[in-house]
Length: 257
Image (cartoon, rainbow, N blue to C red; front, side, top):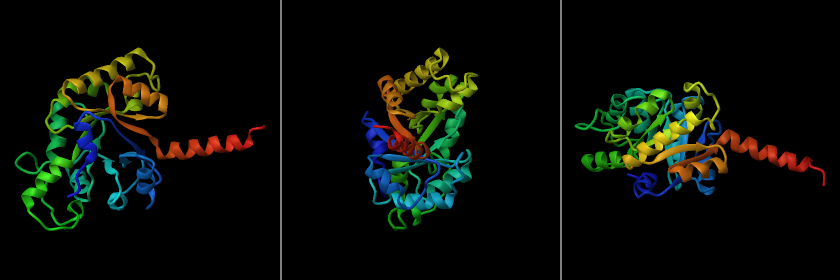
């Protein structure tokens, strides 16, 4: 089974860079992103309307490319988790994780018995339609699969230390917009309360030796958060990347000499 070099890199204490896809899930997307230097891509299913069938195609396009496909599922359920893992997803980014108990539950969905409850389906997409020793495949699947908790609510911040203490939670990702909404300071990312919440998340990640992840809308934001300790950094999203580049280009063409 194909390994997960991003998980391995983060475990060594290094930084991994990627991006998010909401809209432009075309056959060439994975190749373009990998060529641009992205080490991972998070396909969003929570807000985008991207289907499981399309996710399966995107994961197939990622094969042979030096890029790791992760997915933010549309919900938190065993059924969705099992299907996404069986079609080859290498990691899941679960929205609004708010307690140790919830973290333990989502980890169990991604682990085979006796550590979890993941059902058996071998010889399919996730193991490249191949044969082989089942025990070895189980071990490989668990070694490569990332379970990432989105910390994006006040309750999540309050429980972040307990969440990251759970064996099998591989990283904490900040959902900065939702976090600001639940704090009653929508979009006020320079607010001292928001700053304190980010500090608490980073401190918990350091305590448990797990990477902190974020979505950086621009280079300045990303470098500032990397300086604070973030090591899993997604640079922008597909919509903003295309729109921003086009807007800048047209503005440049219209500019007077």
